[in-house]
Amino acid sequence: MGETVDAAFATRPKEQGTLLFTKKQMPYILSHDEQAAANQPSARINDVGLYLVTLTNVEPISVNAQDPRMGDRCLKVSLLNCKIGKANSFAYRKRNYCKTFGEQHVQFRPIAYTDEPRAAERVIMRALLEWRLRSPAGRRTEWLGGITADEAERVVLAALRGAGIAFMASDIEPASTED
Image (tube, rainbow, N blue to C red):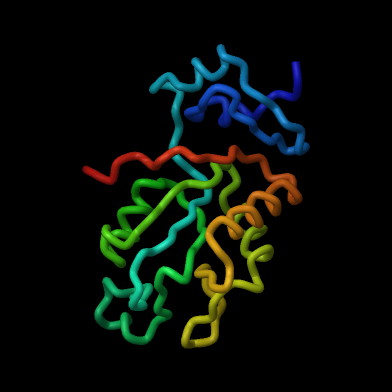
């Protein structure tokens, strides 16, 4: 049998043939029994990892639109931009974007589960540096311009592999945002 996957990864929801990367960048495909065990509700852990958010609005909206004191002084983004960030709960993070930009404008999806979200975020922010937008105050933000969402995702996954950070690529939809 191949390299084992961190115990935390074995508790994630998985589909048949899910490909994981271990810290040593060795591919590992879950067996049918491992997948069945991982899909048990009692085995699941928090949805921690990296996400991608894109918008559908044509007119730019402030990244702090929900705060009338700051909204006009902040970076404004539209469908020309995307953002990749870390979340300790994908559902909670998606709900926050919907509050800011309006549910009709938000397209949110997890792109990688990892137990090292802070380290992963540092790696990806360096990898995406040339596309990171500056705020009106001149600081680099996590919002990206001049790169498509698909290209950004490819850069992120390659950077994670290159840094040796254990992760599971994901096309799984986040949990419902209903309370």
